[in-house]
Each structure stands twice: as C-alpha cells, then as structure tokens.
Image (cartoon, rainbow, N blue to C red; front, side, top):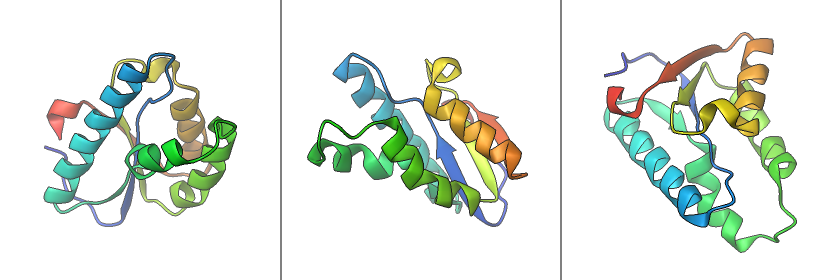
Length: 117
C-alpha cells in the first residue's frame, strides 16, 4: 500500500494503442487504481479516467497534444506524479511527457505497480 502524503497526486498511465480493447483495459486498470487511491484517502487526478469517456464524445481530430495541454496545468499543481506500471508504460509518449514535465518542475515521481496500491 502506498503511504499517505498530503497534496494532489497525478496518476499517469499508458492509454494509446491501435486496439480499442487494449485502450479499454488500460482505462479499467487506471480506474481501479484511482478508486484504490481514493479509498486510501489520497487526493488523486487521473487524466485517463477523467478523459476516457469525454474523448469518445470529441472529434477524432483530438490527439495527444490536445490532451497533454489539458493535463499540464493539473500536473504542475500536483505534489507527486504516480506512474502506473501497466503494460506499455515504457513506450508511452504521454507517460514520457508527464515524467519529463514533473522532473522539470521538481515534482516527485513515484513508479507504482497496480497491486501495490
């Protein structure tokens, strides 16, 4: 179990994939992790959980750049970036961008396995 600290936690996880089933599974895993963190008393924002359904309603032209511009202000306001180590996280353009932004802004980066939450 992740030890509790005060402040906003930003939960990063891979999402993009050519297979819609993989995207849906990644969403479900991020949702489970978000719920576990909330139940543990953490304040958490998961861009994947927050935008999964919203993205379905937006134009197909909405891409990574659109979402990262939505998420950057929240990440910069966070005290900690939690990177959920789902399959594909090492190759995720979004996760890499989030880690880079966190490092540049002196935000703690913590890598977590889903089962450790």
